[in-house]
Length: 230
Image (tube, rainbow, N blue to C red; front, side):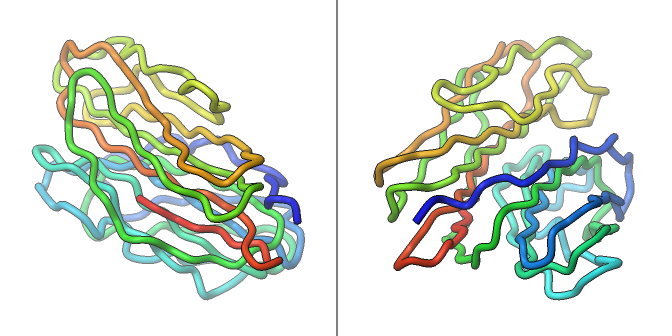
C-alpha cells in the first residue's frame, strides 16, 4: 500500500505579534482526507510547552493537538494538530494559543489516514546543528521535519541548510523580524523501513535558541497511518 500523499499545501502565514490566536485557511479540500497544521512559535513570557491549546474550524470539529517540541530561554517551539475524515470545502481555522506569541503556521492536506502519536522530545539549543530522527514501521512513508530557530540580535540571513540532505523543502525563512522564529518545513518519501534523520546547520552568530520537530505519515497493516513525533 502506498504512503499517504500531499494533496495541497498552504504557504506559511504572515506571523502574528503578541497574539493569542492565529487565523489560517485552506480551500478546495476533498471529503475524507486528513488535514495537518503545523505552527512554529516563540513567546517572551517564558512559557514552555502547551502553547497550542486548540484549533477551531469553520467546517469541522475533532482536531487533535500535539504539543510540543520546545526549548527554553526564550521558548521556541513547534506544535501540530490533525483532523481526519474531513468535510469537503473551505476550512477556516483559528489556532488558539495559551500565551501571547509570535507565531506562523502552515497547512497540509493529505490523502486519508488515521493518526497515532509518539512521545514528545525537546531538542536543545546548539550553535552548529540540530538533528531529529524517527524509525518508520512501514516501507513507504511520507515523512515531515520541522525546524524553528530564534535570533538573539539584529536580523541577518541565518543560513539554514535548505533543504536538509535527502529532503525537499516546503518553506524556509532565513531572515525574519526580531522575535519571530526562522523556520523550515521539509518532507521526504521513503521506500524502505528504517531510521530517518533531518539535520540542519546554520551560522551560529547571534542564534539564541533552536528547536526541531519531526512528523511522518506511513502505512501499517494495510491502513494509512500518520505518526507524529515532536
